[in-house]
Image (cartoon, rainbow, N blue to C red; front, side):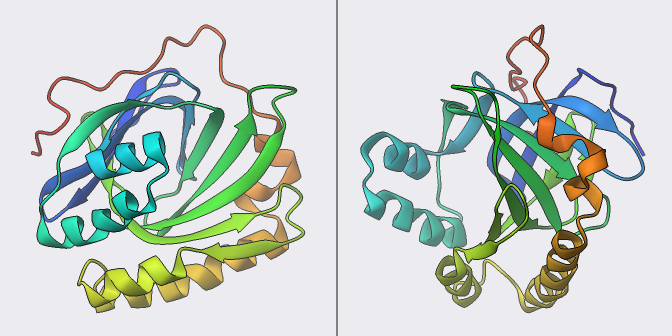
Length: 219
């Protein structure tokens, strides 16, 4: 297993049917047997579907709605985007069907605004970072873990109908739901107070992470 060093730039790629759906440049916070932990702040470079960029720029919901059929058909184009508005920490454990993400307000005291559990394929490490695939379902969690709510369940169901989420993946997500909720209820892993992720801040000396020129080339 390739181990990444603190401050190194790595790239998370979401890959569907041997084609890159998105790519996101991060800085490594730590890489341990527990999890690969990555940090992001405004300025990080991404490659994302142009429908997503259109939606962000215009607020046109129909642009976002086109993204899933395009994904199912293998018919999408990527554009460059820059992360903005929040700082973001991503905790990615091995052999697990979700990651845990923490989002922070960069306009004030850098407080933790919410946790976000993203259900995805287990990571597969690459020379530039890791590959996975977002399985459309998310869980949004209050900073103090007092409440949570499921997000994008309709999109997840639609993705199943379109064949984006297979039956095998659906069963894995079902088990991962229980695992994630138990982790929240017990306040363990990244949610543990003594883990220190609630108070994380990006290193001021970090340059903005950039995507490599060959980011869309798969091995």
